[in-house]
Length: 331
Ligand code: UT7
Image (cartoon, rainbow, N blue to C red; front, top):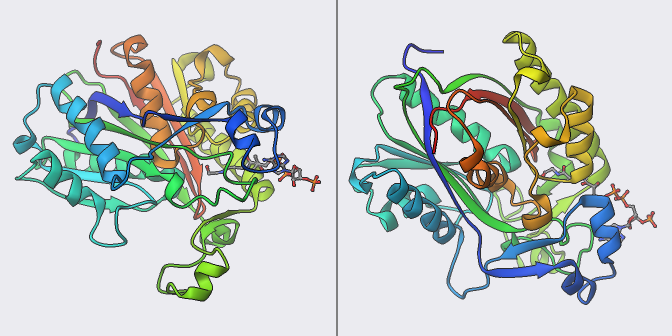
């Protein structure tokens, strides 16, 4: 890592008003609240229903609140990185749309496509810019409108996902706390298990791809489940070993919220008691790139300067990893 340490100096989140409950899903597909609760831990998820609204609009809500909280002027933002698999448009990217909407007139930006690891990969990228010494204020966003790519006739996926956005501000550390270490990984051989089959250059959109429902999320859940448990547990352990940390030393484990059973397995394997694991999957479901910043936002008032956090994620690609950071401020 460079001499300048990047630290998170603020966090904010946004979820749309509409709440899609398990009960409502029971009327849409052949499922039950009991199955969803026991197999995933999810009770409800928020869905963006407003006509003409997209991922950038949720991100803008999160970022505007963040700028206010941190007394940051939009024109002082240098760079915006947005982790998302549901960009407003295939191109241009969503980060530039966000910059335009918030008035970040001196910033540039780009999207990071790493599915559920989107926030971790974006955070890593943003930290490198801060560490270079040239960038002073970097917005890192995880935002996904999963409802735009979910087939609400497919009970194996529609029960899982929700919409939301979370954002953090990265600045050079003034306290000595910040991003300490990471172990980020990818394995393209896993791409067939979790993907959107059409719409890209391999299978451009046609009437046939639409008829075959290939513009929706496809997931083969079991292999993803197994790889997620293994990948998250291994990378968290690697980061802890490298920094001579045990689970007792870590204040909070912040896992991507994909399935409560995955979170429980990973926490147990690593020896984390439940009260040290951020879990809000019951309220939001899997919001893809937004799950981790939404957790940080919800727990912000409990976080203290110097707290040791490990963030971990696993997602389509496959992509996965763990990031170790020390919290830089008291709220
Ligand atoms: O965030 C990115 C990474 N994603 C993940 O980490 C997700 C990983 N995978 C999972 O979380 C789980 O695999 C799922 C929640 C997707 C599925 O749970 P599962 O325990 O692996 O179920 P399964 O796919 O093995 O299906 C078991 C049964 C099947 O019926 P049969 O073949 O045993 O008769 C499914 O058809 O459950 C059935 N099923 C359902 N039943 C009621 C599948 N979805 C539903 C449903 N309601 N919504």
